Length: 220
Image (cartoon, rainbow, N blue to C red; front, top):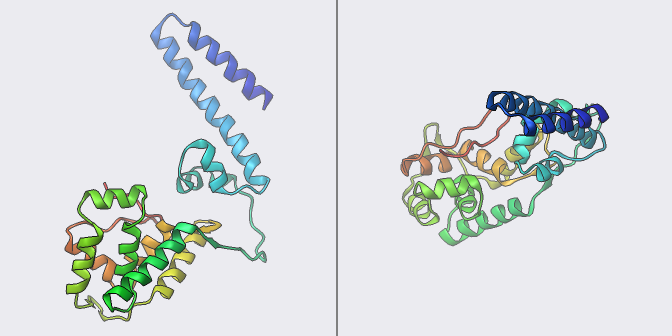
């Protein structure tokens, strides 16, 4: 680490003293690479010490998903026989509670459209993007009242329990220690009852894409 620190100081001084812009830019580019390498050293130390990707992401000012994508190769291998513990975040618990409340108020069986509705009632980058495109709680409620519940594969019973279970699988596949709201959103959109996906389609909004690990990508 001493070599990294010395090199960073050397490059910072060289770029500040450079009289020619092209020299300064080349030096700054090299400095950025050196800083990135130094960041990886510290991230690796944190992960080896048992810190989570959430712990790493917070001081870097990035999301936990972004930290996982960027640094997952630095994480220590988990023992195959080690049981992993997954904890739902407070926000995820609120979403499940709100979804059940919405279904109860509507006199309906709780399903994916109610999870979507509950998610939109929370505050996050993805939900703000959805609301900016007109996916509001009021419009989702209106769609749910008029929805026949008939998906492409025929009627499938709704189940928040199934959605939560799928969200947990998504979180574990991302090597998370927390079941969060994005995992619930992806699970709702891909659920067999089709309610959340039909709601987004009816409101002319393409459902947020998900990568092979189930990460929800914000609506553009």
